[in-house]
Length: 444
View 1 (cartoon, rainbow, N blue to C red):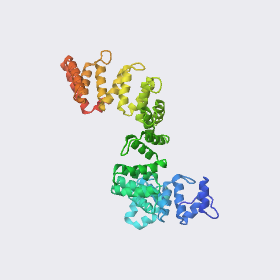
View 2 (cartoon, rainbow, N blue to C red):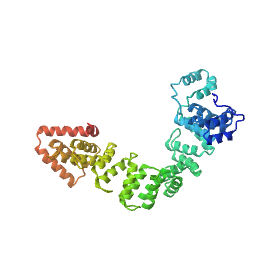
View 3 (cartoon, helix red, strand yellow):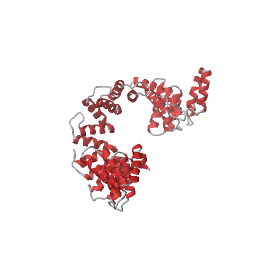
View 4 (cartoon, helix red, strand yellow):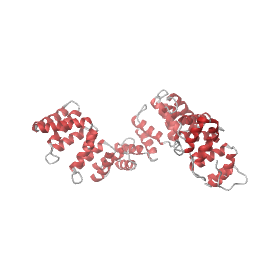
């Protein structure tokens, strides 16, 4: 292991190193901890691993971090075992297979495994880290978990829940989650609550689910706050409680959770659990939309287009509809398409408007198909009877049987009677191409 460049202290002292670390004097922390680590002090070894992993007082080096974590882990230090498991789970360090020492080790190990193992430690101080190895990760997580390390127990639950490195088993996952949850691990409390809410590995029990969600939420765990909000808003397994839902959404929203922000805004729009106030809707949707939440962006478009929180502002509505439409929101694509095609708030942009309607139609939106048919049928708009005929037929095919469908079929029949045989053939070709790959045709 390479030596520290820091000046040696007369008598290394772990506690003095800790005091220096807390004071952000990392060079002094290294000066105290490195000699102790080299003498076999497992807590100092773990701390040196942390310093190398974070690049504090030393050059950041996952290889050296893994070296010291392993030294401490082999002495039973649960924090080091957990950290070493993370190294293996994440494959921390440089690319492994391209590194010359790794290739050397793999070659020598076949001919002389004893010599190779004796030199294996040389790989770590040279900044090579460890490769991703889920089996090693499971081994070290298990070691730490058995010693009561709450985060390791939570990770063991995750491994069993998703079947990574072990057979998928939600019952075993629940056992590990419970061990960590009872120690106060918020992530494990949330995970255990989710198992109870869905009946995975345990009997479905909303009372237990809510109890564990509440314990996690009480620690500020934002996903648990959101889960409780959804449960109380929709009355999932319990009576609906809009006021409580709003309170839970607010807790998560104030932590910056984009979904909670837009959902809280929508409660204000409906006046559920809170007084109806579109200004609050605007505030929370804007915070969420600025984070890229597509639902919030669409709702901002609606607010501005309809003047729900002030004056109608089609230009601002178009900005937010466009953001949502570019993320594939079908409602935004339709609304933006109609705004552009009809020139609401500005000069008509018929080509771009129809283009957005076509994208919505590719997602099966019947209204988009009908509006395209109407635009193509109008003499003062796109005025293309063949395209109008195509979209009335497509809209009719996508509609449920009944008067609306019959009306669309009648309009298609009326247009079809006016088309030449060549135009009807062209229409048939267009419909066949669309049916094969609507999204490709829409993007063309």
